[in-house]
Amino acid sequence: MSTSAAITARPGFPYRRLATDFLYGQVLNLVCGLATTYILGMGGGFLANWLVSICIGTIALLLIDGSRLAIWGENRRPHWLAFILIVAVSVPVAQVGGMRLGGWLLGYVMGDLISIGSGMSGRMMVFTLLAAGAATIFFNGRDRALRAEAALAQERARTETVARQALQAQLQSLQAQIEPHMLFNTLANLQGLIAIDPPRAQEMLEQLIQYLRATLTSSRAESATLAQEFALMEAYLGLMRIRMGERLSYGLTLPPALRGVAVPPMLLQPLVENAIAHGLEPRIEGGHLAIAAQLDGGVLVLTVQDNGRGLDAGPGKAGTSVGLANTRERLQAIYGARAALTLEPAVPQGAIARITLPT
Image 1 (cartoon, one colour):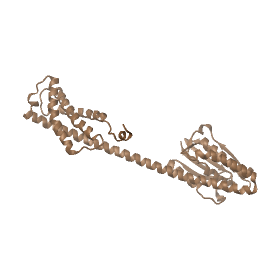
Image 2 (spheres, one colour; image 1 turned 90 degrees about the vertical axis):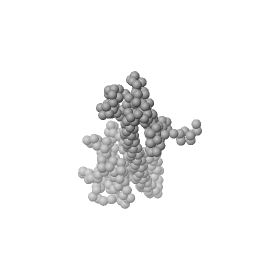
Image 3 (tube, rainbow, N blue to C red; image 1 turned 90 degrees about the horizontal axis):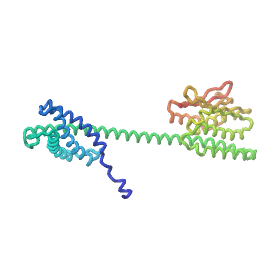
């Protein structure tokens, strides 16, 4: 069979659906057995009438529901005129065939019950037709509910897919704004060093290449581990140490138990860059930067603390102002109100940038 033929081939007969309908049909057969015994006053006792109802109802179900599923499948609505014709043919066939089968199983001679045109046969035919109509209404209602549920689930899945794609595009856009911000600053510093200190410029260039190699994969990933984030920050701070010399010292604290925790990539980069640009670099004596991760009451806390100029000193130099704003937007897009970024004064001086994330 060709590929195109396989793609367009109709699905097989829904035997599982027919089996489910058969179980529902047996409940209706029980009701019919009770009705023929205690309402219509048919002789033979309840068990005999129930057996005959099972025979008639099962044949009717196989003819009507089986034809519907074979022609229109599970998810298509049957054409009303064709379906009425199927019911009109199936009811007398099920009536006569079910009575004969039930009489054979019970060892009875049904007589007028299977004689087309007799009064008793007519009343039984009407009763069978009403039962088939009730079953048809039930199954059609259930089909509509199932189709509505399937359509709702499909629409919900489509909406979630669109929302997920929009969120991913937003995060990639925000992340793309952060990376050029860091690169432009570094390249500007490298340009200045080339003229005044070529050996340090060469060292910075080598460190920059090492840093870019380290970030090439993780910066485009949907998530990174804390171990990867701290390794990237160590490479970045090594780059800044070349630029600032002894004016910059730093420390990183990452407990072994937290090394594998997943976080958004490039999450700490804007905070570290902000601390250096506005807190430490403007000071003649520079300062110390500490990056740490810890669990506090089931919440992951990431801190970037410096002993620089502090929050009240104002910006140390002009910038694009996208770093902290984008970090907040990324946290909001991913975690909503469960995550936060705060800035507060450090003691005795400096500033603390703190990110709290759910675990």
